[in-house]
Image (cartoon, rainbow, N blue to C red; front, side):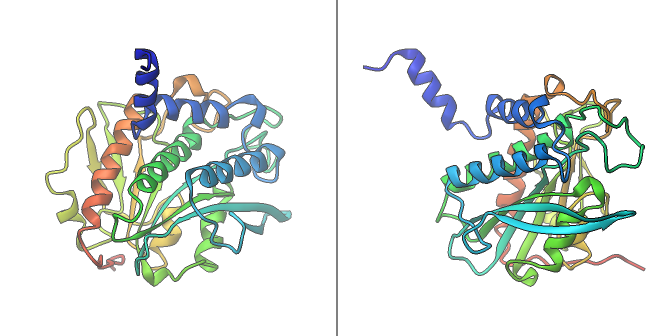
Length: 302
């Protein structure tokens, strides 16, 4: 007979999304050990390997041959051939169409590539920006792996590199997609979802990017979470590159704060319980979106 504590621990592991697990992921990614996960810095590469390891552990499959990585280089001002990589994990449900879930894993690192805009040499841990998004990505992967074979769409989970330096990972992926973009049902992006402000609520962008979004959102509620929508499909995060390439998008963001792009964006400030509820809201919306066999893309109005 199991002790009560053992049963409780086992039950906690079955809870998806789980606030304690979210906090643990952010604690690691935003630790000084990773030194801010800077692009072309050791900590950034360590973070990419961590995400790949989690994808493999969850049972997601590589889609770039036998690799979870999509390596690329880019130029920025006087800096040439800056190396970065996307991390991709595929959940194959044998469907014709695929949902892409994304978040960027990079942050400012020690700010060496930012031309003095931020204090060079100081560690910018980026707990909210965007370790919180990666934690959400992994929780959604865990949830849909658990339901593998039951869903009418495949899932591609992408942790993007180089976002802070100009949305480089999503720019590269949409130029070199590993499956046709016209077979993507929609792309959901999480960037800074860890500092929920109940007065503001969470913003969800891209509401105008698909004809069906108003029907998908109708009457959706999540206890403890207030949300508002924004029509824009373009924006300063990775969903932008999917939208301009004809893919409907949803973009989740809890808003700016005084620690944005500062060395003070640290893990203890994360609101993990609220983030878990935000991920639950996302699950509701994803599941409702899957009741439509096709979403009809809406481009910008002139």
